[in-house]
Length: 104
Image (tube, rainbow, N blue to C red; front, side, top):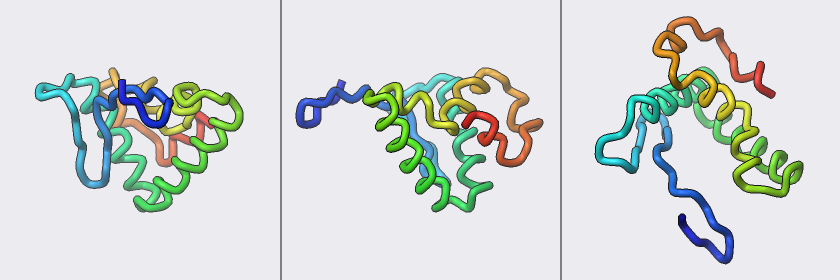
């Protein structure tokens, strides 16, 4: 855990920063990579910058709603879509455009 001014944050295993995927483990799992690839697709279809603005806004709204960092993160529509489909190898081939909207 990372400690910032009394707030415990979980270590991040990976993050998608268009056009890169940055991972913490030296040998990341297939699931981590695919989860982040889903985020790259989300970023691309939203023309990158709006994705980040939406992500932060939704996280803030969820934090106000749940008063919990982890719950706020887990209820972001982009994360819900990625977690639900990170084990489906065909997902990016069949994923409808702006599919994350189904998870709001």
